[in-house]
Amino acid sequence: MSAVERILSAANLFARLELAVELVDVATVRSHYRRLALAVHPDKCSDAKAKDAFQALSEAFEKLSSEVGQKQCLKEAGIFQGKARQAQRPQPQDDTKAHWWDTKTWEEFEERLRHRQRAEEALTRQYSSGLRARFATFKVRNYVKAAERAVEHLDRQKELPESPLWPPESTQAARDLEEEVAKARQTEPWPGAANELLPDYQERAELNDAALAIQRLLELMTHLRTVHLYCIYCGCTYDSPADMDRNCPGITEEEHDEAKSFGVRTSEETCVEAHVPDEGEDPLEAYMATINAELPKQKKRRR
Ligand SMILES: [Zn+2]
Figure 1: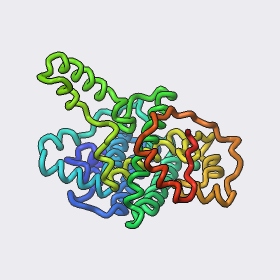
Figure 2: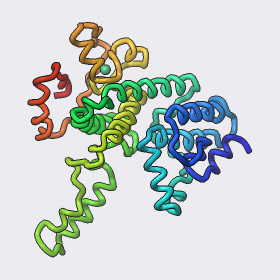
Figure 3: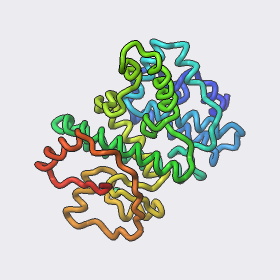
């Protein structure tokens, strides 16, 4: 059986990457992904289904490239076996969606994969160390929300379809739910009862899990930096990957702060400010501002 067939007929996400269904070291997931990607990348493989296989492989990688993602998959496989198996079957390729792994050439793909690895290492370094973890969770939450808004804004500009990376309240599912709640209001047993059906988009309880929030931030930043050449800390869109490498000081907020305080930062003339609409003043952010006062100066470039 060819690699393309093996991936497309795999029983679950782990099998697509030729991994046993158990927690695996992230480096192992990455090396399996790279090896299989080389075998089925449309630039390297002439099989008519290469693109579908590469897509299915990349989706499995995106999900399993973190411990949180792996745990989620293992849980789904255990509790909702039937459902999970159905959900994990590769879906027909949607050509209109832009993913960081969609590139014309293998070289560009490899560069993006390397970029993603660097981003992952940098984010882990910056946010996962024990002492700062509690404080970091607040910050990561806010960056996730800002990055989600930026993705929606830039995707819309390019007329890309709705994506799971957009703020949850901006999706069709949210609009459907709102409609449902509006209907429920007409027959609610007590005033405000229907509101309980609405999720609290401000609260976003899932982001309280630091590992999950960091993973989401990584996915968002990978999309912004590779598909849109946009840096959330610089607050702008670059002309080319080379331009970004030259002028953006790095992947993390820390690298931007250091560049600023040491005056390393080069010119911004190639950097096109992208005005991403901001949400209203967040009470949490106001509270954080008082804490931030004790820390090195924060950038609030988009305000
Ligand atoms: Zn930057």
